[in-house]
Length: 203
Ligand code: GRF
Image 1 (cartoon, rainbow, N blue to C red):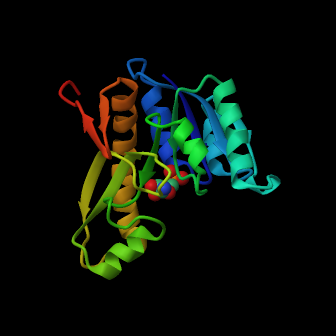
Image 2: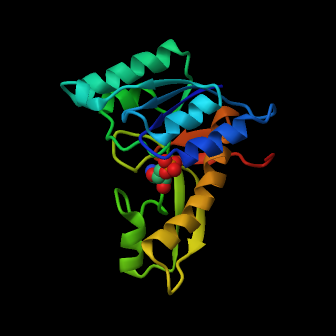
């Protein structure tokens, strides 16, 4: 499957996807990386891997819908079949998410449905949870609320800081994201309401 990745920053999850796609047996190929922020490190990672990039600054558009339409046009022109959000820090309009329903995934640094939104690691420490983690889910119009494909949990340790916990979760993100992309690309995901059933028998 041809994949487009949307980024806004450092791009370590993009790198995990690039590395997974380097295996000829992996059922997906990244054909386009779009950033809404100019000159971020994620773009450099893509260029290094020989992947086409576009910078589409959201500030150049009068509305969220117009910005989303510009991204949509680029994705479709590149023949993209699956969209991965990888540290993409913009809310998406309903028409855009509906246009990619079942074919757009996001990685969120918490065990959804706990800790939707921002500052997940700080909030996990403040709440005193003992398990935290990450989630890859299908994107729906509601923020961080779509059907869950893959999760991984890590312990929250007594001396954790926001940074130490983030680093422990990030390691798991880099495992979960390629796995979820593979399952979706292989057609092993069946959506039933807000639940995704994943056939991981042959993984
Ligand atoms: C990750 O923690 C991801 O879960 C969150 O934003 C961060 C992006 O990191 N949505 P990177 O750009 O992939 O390194």
